[in-house]
Length: 295
Image (tube, one colour):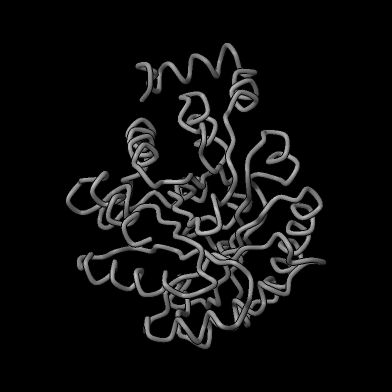
């Protein structure tokens, strides 16, 4: 962390000078979402804690230590080729106070109400950033999770609120990254369908939401069979970033899956989180540098 400002220092500033967040946001040096005609986007994701998803691998509380998480984020953001960060309000404001967001793309996570493992997990209400918050803080974009269960009538509410959020972002000319999934309940949990057909349908649905798609980006996973990605991504002309999911034990194979999908014409970059911040070997810098190299 910069200038020796640890969790205690951040808490002290928050308690005594809450206006410091807005002041830091006003001072932040901004940049375009993409740089140049050939620019690609490399974003580190850390919006998991706001949904209660703190686990990495076998460690169910790996992301629970905020000081450790901020250290990892600051290291990742300092690596060449990293363009920005995606997180909830509290994490982004910690990074603002640390001065870690200058010349970075800042993406606020908008709907975090579907808490991991909760009975209401599919009810992805907008409990995070609103469009007006992102505008007020001078952030660069928003992100929303769009999980659809064809057997759950509540998914219609999710679709409706997501569409209105996209409208609100477009009114402010702010990009919004929509992360769509077709899901279903299985043995008390939520299972995501990563078949080519399901991902194609989710992309088609997300692309058609709201009164305009002018400011909509897609955030899409690699399908079960990576060879299907070219056909899947042909479902929309919207710009997309690749969702870098869990690398698992075989990191080299996972990186190769990302590499292939990143060559597709509508794919503009990569958003990856826990797999880079908490790599199996503990080397954050190396994991991030490898991901940047894929672009």
